[in-house]
Image 1 (cartoon, rainbow, N blue to C red):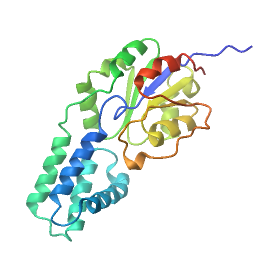
Image 2 (cartoon, rainbow, N blue to C red; image 1 turned 30 degrees about the vertical axis):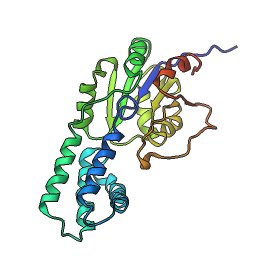
Image 3 (tube, rainbow, N blue to C red; image 1 turned 135 degrees about the vertical axis):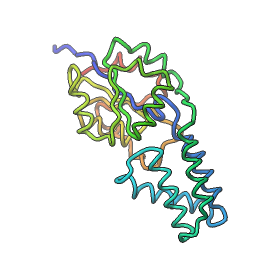
Length: 236
């Protein structure tokens, strides 16, 4: 009988997997809709903002800077170019405030990383603005647990194959842990790795896809506290 090999590499998403993120975007969006309340209803402003974000991903990528530019673009569109300069200034201000939010780590994040360090090759795989992601990693106090940090422009099967191929066993002996099915789980599975889904109460609508429950290497846990027992039950 062929012996099963232990998973050797674990990739972790950052935003809303290791620390809170989306809730701060939601609060900022509420401030933004309040700023434009004289011009349109809040739901309409949010819908137009989402359209702008979709259009701008190819140009600005993921992160706060792109989000701020999309808010400005939306304000110009909704007001037919009549948005006061003072409102633009306030939008820039709430964008800067978003960059200052303290980092709140998720339940079990530190204890799980402490338990895994030295037992697995740990790599943080996150997308977004380089400056902001580096800031959050430093403030989280979790950086020393990782053997490598990858801040990427997007997450695709090619991204995961490249990163996991550097570790012992390659993608076949790797697992990706994250809250986004679209970015963390589906492409990791396509690369040949395990995909361990950790749902978050707030997930950006553009990250929503159907869970690949029929995929042999798909797993779901309620929170990071369930990761250690799960890892003892899977092998490559």
